[in-house]
Amino acid sequence: MTVTRTRTPLPPPGRPGAAGAPYVDVAAPLVADGAANPRRLGAHLVGDGVDVAVHATRAHRVDVCLLNVAADGALTERRYRLQGPVDGIWHGHVPGVRAGQRYGFRVHGHWDPSAGLLHNPAKLLLDPYARALTGQVTVAPPIYAHAVDDALVPVDGGSRDGTDSAPFVAHGVVVDAGFDGAVPSPASRGTGRCSTRPTCAA
Image (cartoon, rainbow, N blue to C red; front, side, top):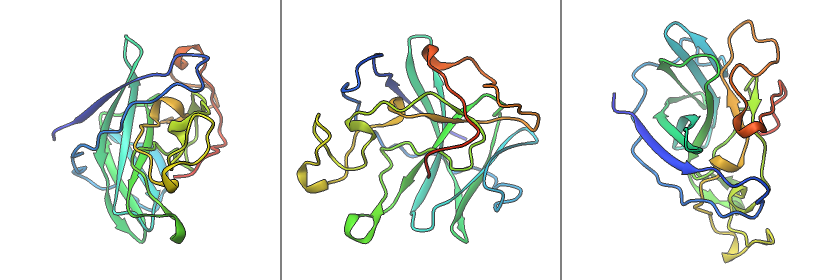
């Protein structure tokens, strides 16, 4: 399987208005195997890796994104296209993943705010079934699905924004069955936070 990798600088601390990098949509490889139980939502260690499943009824494609902070501070990302949908659920098994792995989802589909369709793969979405989180949200234009200016006022008629939000948002963390609420990997940039109550939805 060919692994798709991207690389994005993290925003400087204390720079809530920092500009983000453009999102680059690359051909993520389709996972070879589906999740053992597609209806078990979230991320669960199974066998040699992790099973992931997320509900996205109106999506055309869903990628699970595995994130790591490189030695130079850049955020690296590997994307895998999930199988589906099965009753609105996208799922897959990614080998080689262990506890402590950061992850999120990118959802592809129509952009039609008047119909409630706000699919934007440039925005890394938090798994609503994540059992642990790390990082924090930086309130800045890149976290908005629609285009806004530096004052966070909508511009361009509310068109879809193409800035990658991954460095500006919290990430889910894969945990094992014995998870006790502590982050299983070093906190990112000294600001890592962990919660068993996800606050964002995919």
